[in-house]
Length: 166
Image (cartoon, rainbow, N blue to C red; front, side, top):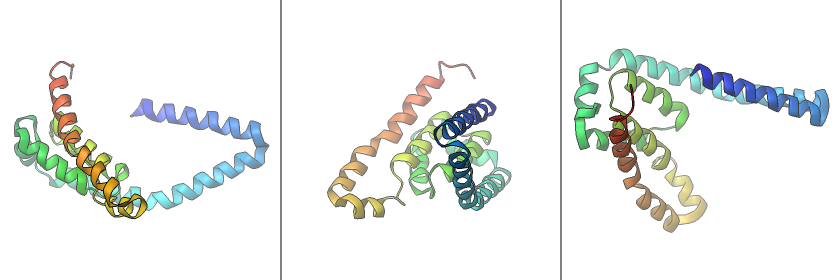
């Protein structure tokens, strides 16, 4: 996490320098203002997400996670993860902290990858938007062709985890 933050900060510095180079202080300040507007819109959501993740971490018993979502949960854990991922509203800003909480509580690698892949590919929240944007045929084909992918990704990750150091 620390290296990711350092990398993103470095990229922000590079983009800031590029803005200054292309448009001087005016473009640089425009970039800062746009960042502030985005941050102001996202900050309430992020605050709620971190509250949800924190309460989930302290309220979700490790034994429950071990029983239903650990490496030993088998196909049942993958099915639960796929359903939860598809039902997670808000995509990454909501799902990533929840996945981190599940990881700390003992969820298995395959379950986590299934959840994250399902959240990205099968979001039920996005389906009405897709129907309105490009119609029922393409939406149905995309969802149907994506259904096996979270299971496959979870199974592959579980298999690969056997060979990688902890």
